[in-house]
Structure formats: C-alpha cells, structure tokens
Length: 265
Image (cartoon, rainbow, N blue to C red; front, side, top):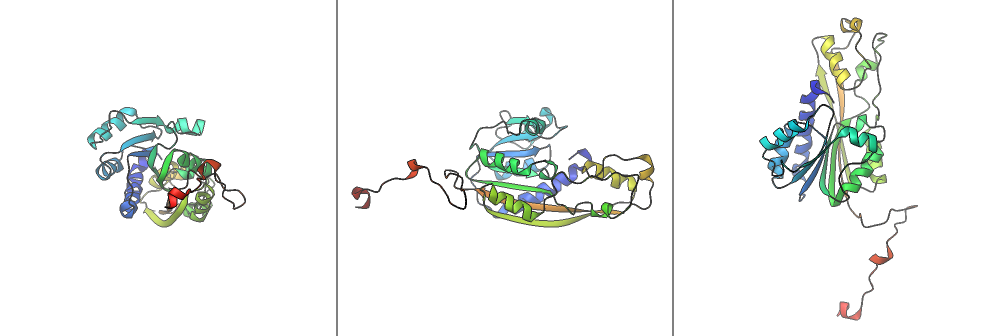
C-alpha cells in the first residue's frame, strides 16, 4: 500500500477494530504488520493502554514517523517498542520476534501482496501465545473487476499476487492449526471524476504495471472501481499439541500424567 491510499488503510483498520469490540482478549503484546503512522495506533492505545507493540513497518515509513505517532498516541512503550521493516520479513520469511511473544496479530491489507500467505500464517502461529488471536483484512479476487472487463491495450493489468477468496483463507487457517476462524467480506465502490485519479489508485493497489500517458485521457475507462475487502480472525489454541497427521492428533508422552489414588481421593 502506498501513500495515496493511506486513507483506505485507516478506514479498513477502523472497521477491523470495530469487529474486535465483541472479542474478549487480555492483550499485553501486539504485532502490527504492516504498521504505518495511521489513526489505528491511537485506537489500539486506548483499547490496550498497557500493551507493548511490535511493528513490522511498511516501505516508506521511517522509524521517526512511527516513534512520533506512538508518542502522540500515548503508547506506554513508545520508547522501547520493537520495530523492523516489512522488507526484512519478505526477504527472510521470518518476523524478528521470539516464539510465543504476542497476544494479538493485527494485519491490515497485506495478504494479497504476499506470494505465500500460508507461510505468513505459520509465522503468526509461531509468535502468538496460547489463546492469542490473529485478525486481518486483505483485497479479494473481485477487486478491480471493472478494469478486467475492458479492453485497454495501453494499460497493462496485474493480478493480485495472492487472489484468495474468503473460503481459501478459511481453509488455510484450519490447515495452519488455527481454531474457530471467522470470515467476512464486503464490497466498497470508489467513484472517480478523472481517469488519472483512478489509474493512480490502481497503481497504488498494484493492479497495473505502469500508467502510460495515453491511458490517462481515455474516456473508455470506468468511473468506478470495486474493492472486495475480506476480513477474518482466528485463535491460536492447542499449541502444546503435536501437529495432526491423517486426521489423528498426536500428544507428547510427557503430557500424559498418570492419576494416582491420592489424586482421586
């Protein structure tokens, strides 16, 4: 996501936080990926005033921007929060934080840009504590469908890197050992007065490769774009269990405790 669509990140983050209103969770540590200097930080600070935040910052967001925003949001840990760039994760495939270290993973409009969302879910499982929650949003496969319906020789369209619908993601969560996944979806329509503005947003959403000058004046372009927004959350439960194989769950022998007579007395 790039600067022209910061408002969209803020809007979707706000909707994600509203969906968390009914969730009861004791939060001491939060991982925000990707993190940006948006309004969501103030809401998170008010909801979880004692929480520490781990930031995986997107491209173009400086450490000073994040520090200033967190300080203005009254983050208790603004001076000691852990931060690393998203580029570090995309190159290494690993968050720079320990196993079982956060209670909440908050991911806003990222998964559609990852080549392997399943690996992302595995990393979230690794860093979540027992009973922790992952909550996320991403662009679904119907995003920008108006452009794909047109013949635009001057505009080279791109597909989302991971065009998953909510059923694909629900299956991936269950396959990644998450429990009780809840998926939801909505369509947002963006209306435009000028083709140049529409193309600029499509470039920011990574739906086109480039914007040729001739394309900006084309009247054939749609005046609106549909965004499919997919939301989901799931719980990290049973992390002490070995991974199931062939629908059979295997327990570590050390977890089996023999009941003695004194226990039953």
